[in-house]
Image (cartoon, rainbow, N blue to C red):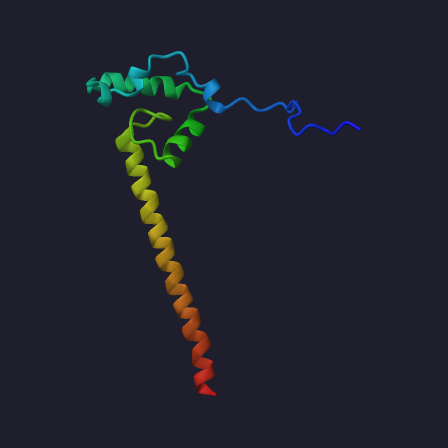
Amino acid sequence: MPRPSRYAPDSIARPVHWSRQAACLEADPLDFFPKEHGLEAPFVREQAKAYCRRCPVREQCLRYALDRPEKFGVWGGLDEDERQSIRRSSQRRTRRKAARSQEEDADAAKATAEPAEAA
């Protein structure tokens, strides 16, 4: 009796990766990494950002760059400095949220302990 193969062909259709739909797909990569190639002129960055403004997958691209974190180039319409600013803001919010949570836990523990002490 034949055994089923573990290596059967995959017939499941896979979604197209977001990067295949990017407006910059056919653009010159140098336009998106100006600092790394000595092209510090602001118009080069703005040219890259113009691609991003009309890109259907801009949000996915930016999320990708923030999650990695991508250190260089224009991704999702933001350059490295702008993305770093977003990361810092996010880290500050996370720290504040954690501090508030710790304060609430301490207050709850104190409130729980006070009635027990009164008895």
